Length: 167
Image (cartoon, rainbow, N blue to C red):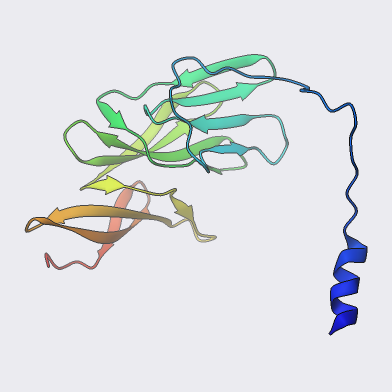
């Protein structure tokens, strides 16, 4: 058992950088709060995509920042996931009316491709399956209490929500 511990430490090499400095810095316009997990880098390292607490989606490519601004948004508690060879971003916002929207955004020009409305508040990042399903967890108010739901989106519409009962 001791040899496993020694092996793990021998594989780890850390280097102290005496003159570490900031290589670059980025300030996003209109951002008051960033949440953990709300930024993603494309697999080609060409883009940084960031969702903000206000619901903005900032697309950073080189020195250029373009911003998608959805309307009617109260907040955003969702991270971002990239799909379609990193050409499309998917995230969720909470609308002013208390519903949520899962939004698909074209990263080339920051335009909405489609969106799906869900009841309640989406509290996490949408998850993509290899088969094209999008899984979204959201909380719905039922009889004065919060109830968790899992919705499955397929072909730009809600295919199923579990549990499907009202209790």
